[in-house]
Length: 286
Image 1: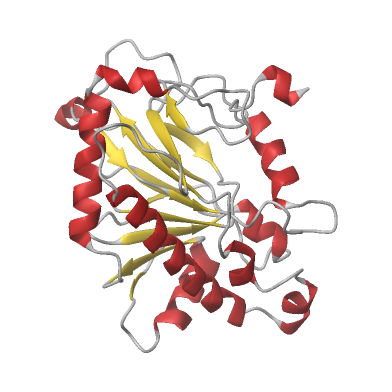
Image 2: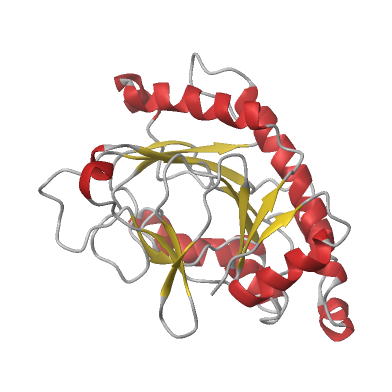
């Protein structure tokens, strides 16, 4: 499996992007309009946040629908995995307050990547067969425009200890629940994608690039034309295990009331999946 890097400025960018996303579920975009300086600055600010004990003052409330804030280490586990992922993270939603001391650059990044997602989904929508396009409740790019459910998750994978629970990894294999995910290149490698034969392949992690992957909501809406692909973040070995890894996936979601299928809106589909991965309280799941 080869995840292709597509030059955003190329006249063939849309065609090449659709091709690699359909073949692998992933695509990497270079020379895109998101400033590398902005990405570096946002990464730097959040590194400082995770290094401070003040993060515990922003712990999320599991009883809220939008679980904004800080999620402590091992808060999440992948579907069908008992061991919690070896990570801590923060959920930032559009227009939400940021932790004290952080600049508005995180808001700017959220806004800029949301705008880019609309353009990318126009590429994907234009490539749909007529029968699938006509079955959509609305064009793909219109589903996500001004969405109240698009989420920026800032993740810290701490250095590995020597007493991890058996089977625990930085991020166990899973599929995303949204429409499409935008992932600025992480600070360390480790992201892998699974092919149809069960083999794992590294996803390019070149500084300044953006990684995209199709998610379950897109698969549902397009009746499998775009497939949600299984991926994971593996534990590093040797001296690399002593280093932190930071990533910032942006989960582009349709608006809450958008009909993704005859039986599911975005919100109903999301609630089912959050229950599966342990991010809904028992009270909410009842």
